[in-house]
Length: 157
Image (cartoon, rainbow, N blue to C red):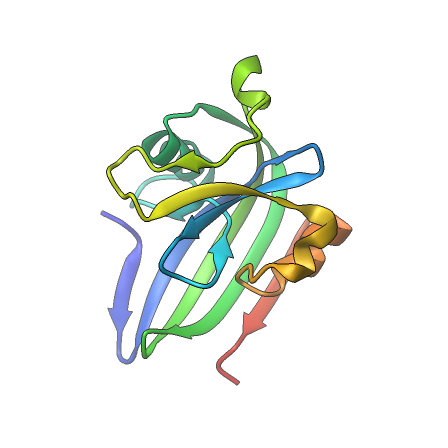
Protein backbone atom coordinates (compact mmCIF):
# COMPACT_ATOMS: atom_id res chain seq x y z
CA UNK A 1 0.00 0.00 0.00
CA UNK A 2 1.38 3.40 -1.04
CA UNK A 3 1.96 6.11 1.54
CA UNK A 4 -0.71 8.46 0.23
CA UNK A 5 -3.61 9.68 2.35
CA UNK A 6 -6.57 11.97 1.92
CA UNK A 7 -6.68 14.30 4.93
CA UNK A 8 -9.38 16.98 4.97
CA UNK A 9 -8.91 18.93 1.72
CA UNK A 10 -5.31 17.72 1.20
CA UNK A 11 -3.67 14.65 -0.24
CA UNK A 12 -0.49 13.62 1.61
CA UNK A 13 2.10 11.88 -0.57
CA UNK A 14 5.38 10.37 0.57
CA UNK A 15 7.53 9.93 -2.55
CA UNK A 16 11.05 9.05 -3.58
CA UNK A 17 12.83 10.03 -6.78
CA UNK A 18 16.16 9.52 -8.50
CA UNK A 19 18.65 11.88 -10.05
CA UNK A 20 20.41 10.01 -12.86
CA UNK A 21 22.96 12.10 -14.76
CA UNK A 22 24.97 11.10 -17.86
CA UNK A 23 26.88 13.38 -20.23
CA UNK A 24 25.56 16.48 -18.41
CA UNK A 25 21.97 15.34 -19.00
CA UNK A 26 19.43 14.32 -16.39
CA UNK A 27 16.73 11.69 -16.81
CA UNK A 28 13.19 12.99 -16.24
CA UNK A 29 9.75 11.41 -16.16
CA UNK A 30 7.32 12.95 -18.68
CA UNK A 31 3.61 12.36 -19.07
CA UNK A 32 2.90 13.34 -22.69
CA UNK A 33 -0.50 14.73 -21.61
CA UNK A 34 1.04 17.17 -19.11
CA UNK A 35 3.14 20.33 -19.58
CA UNK A 36 5.75 19.46 -16.94
CA UNK A 37 8.30 16.79 -16.10
CA UNK A 38 9.50 15.28 -12.82
CA UNK A 39 12.27 13.07 -11.55
CA UNK A 40 11.63 9.34 -12.03
CA UNK A 41 10.37 7.55 -8.94
CA UNK A 42 7.09 7.11 -7.15
CA UNK A 43 5.18 6.73 -3.92
CA UNK A 44 6.84 4.90 -1.08
CA UNK A 45 5.03 1.73 -0.02
CA UNK A 46 4.40 1.05 3.65
CA UNK A 47 7.47 -0.61 5.21
CA UNK A 48 9.69 0.39 2.28
CA UNK A 49 12.67 2.77 2.40
CA UNK A 50 13.07 5.60 -0.11
CA UNK A 51 16.06 3.77 -1.60
CA UNK A 52 14.02 0.59 -2.07
CA UNK A 53 11.19 2.60 -3.62
CA UNK A 54 13.42 4.16 -6.25
CA UNK A 55 14.95 0.81 -7.22
CA UNK A 56 11.50 -0.81 -7.43
CA UNK A 57 9.92 2.04 -9.42
CA UNK A 58 12.75 2.26 -11.98
CA UNK A 59 12.61 -1.52 -12.45
CA UNK A 60 8.79 -1.59 -12.77
CA UNK A 61 8.58 1.41 -15.09
CA UNK A 62 11.71 1.02 -17.24
CA UNK A 63 12.91 -2.54 -16.64
CA UNK A 64 16.30 -1.23 -15.50
CA UNK A 65 18.39 -2.05 -12.44
CA UNK A 66 20.00 0.86 -10.60
CA UNK A 67 22.24 1.43 -7.63
CA UNK A 68 21.85 4.31 -5.21
CA UNK A 69 25.08 6.32 -5.08
CA UNK A 70 24.21 9.13 -2.68
CA UNK A 71 21.66 11.27 -0.93
CA UNK A 72 20.59 14.46 -2.70
CA UNK A 73 18.01 15.84 -0.28
CA UNK A 74 14.43 16.21 0.83
CA UNK A 75 11.77 18.61 -0.41
CA UNK A 76 8.62 19.50 1.49
CA UNK A 77 6.37 20.26 -1.46
CA UNK A 78 2.99 22.02 -1.27
CA UNK A 79 1.09 22.41 -4.55
CA UNK A 80 -2.27 22.11 -6.26
CA UNK A 81 -3.06 19.75 -9.12
CA UNK A 82 -6.47 19.16 -10.69
CA UNK A 83 -8.13 21.28 -7.99
CA UNK A 84 -6.63 19.15 -5.19
CA UNK A 85 -4.10 20.48 -2.67
CA UNK A 86 -1.05 18.29 -2.02
CA UNK A 87 1.39 18.07 0.86
CA UNK A 88 4.24 15.95 -0.41
CA UNK A 89 7.47 14.81 1.21
CA UNK A 90 9.96 13.98 -1.53
CA UNK A 91 13.19 12.08 -0.81
CA UNK A 92 15.75 12.39 -3.61
CA UNK A 93 18.67 10.01 -4.12
CA UNK A 94 21.45 10.00 -6.69
CA UNK A 95 21.41 6.81 -8.76
CA UNK A 96 23.19 5.12 -11.64
CA UNK A 97 22.22 2.31 -13.97
CA UNK A 98 24.07 -0.89 -13.04
CA UNK A 99 24.99 -2.42 -16.42
CA UNK A 100 27.57 -0.86 -18.72
CA UNK A 101 25.04 -1.10 -21.57
CA UNK A 102 22.40 0.85 -19.63
CA UNK A 103 24.97 3.48 -18.62
CA UNK A 104 25.30 4.37 -22.33
CA UNK A 105 21.57 5.04 -22.84
CA UNK A 106 21.02 8.51 -24.30
CA UNK A 107 17.62 7.99 -25.91
CA UNK A 108 14.03 8.30 -24.67
CA UNK A 109 12.87 5.29 -22.68
CA UNK A 110 9.24 4.19 -22.70
CA UNK A 111 7.15 2.85 -19.85
CA UNK A 112 7.04 -0.96 -19.90
CA UNK A 113 3.92 -1.24 -17.70
CA UNK A 114 1.61 -0.42 -20.62
CA UNK A 115 1.35 3.29 -19.78
CA UNK A 116 2.00 4.59 -23.31
CA UNK A 117 1.66 8.19 -22.13
CA UNK A 118 4.81 7.97 -19.95
CA UNK A 119 8.31 8.59 -21.30
CA UNK A 120 11.70 9.00 -19.66
CA UNK A 121 13.70 11.69 -21.45
CA UNK A 122 17.16 13.21 -21.06
CA UNK A 123 17.33 16.98 -20.63
CA UNK A 124 20.47 19.10 -20.75
CA UNK A 125 21.49 20.40 -17.32
CA UNK A 126 22.86 23.58 -18.92
CA UNK A 127 19.37 24.31 -20.28
CA UNK A 128 17.37 23.13 -17.25
CA UNK A 129 15.79 26.60 -16.83
CA UNK A 130 14.01 26.04 -20.16
CA UNK A 131 12.11 23.01 -18.85
CA UNK A 132 9.03 22.99 -16.67
CA UNK A 133 10.46 20.59 -14.09
CA UNK A 134 8.52 20.25 -10.84
CA UNK A 135 8.90 21.01 -8.07
CA UNK A 136 10.25 24.26 -9.52
CA UNK A 137 12.93 24.61 -6.84
CA UNK A 138 14.66 21.55 -8.35
CA UNK A 139 15.97 23.55 -11.31
CA UNK A 140 18.40 25.68 -9.32
CA UNK A 141 19.43 22.81 -7.05
CA UNK A 142 20.20 20.48 -9.96
CA UNK A 143 22.03 23.19 -11.86
CA UNK A 144 24.23 24.13 -8.90
CA UNK A 145 24.57 20.51 -7.71
CA UNK A 146 24.88 21.71 -4.13
CA UNK A 147 23.86 18.64 -2.14
CA UNK A 148 22.57 17.60 0.30
CA UNK A 149 19.66 20.00 0.56
CA UNK A 150 16.39 20.40 2.39
CA UNK A 151 13.91 22.74 0.75
CA UNK A 152 10.35 23.85 1.23
CA UNK A 153 8.51 24.52 -2.02
CA UNK A 154 5.15 26.14 -1.26
CA UNK A 155 3.10 27.03 -4.31
CA UNK A 156 -0.07 27.40 -2.23
CA UNK A 157 0.92 30.75 -0.68
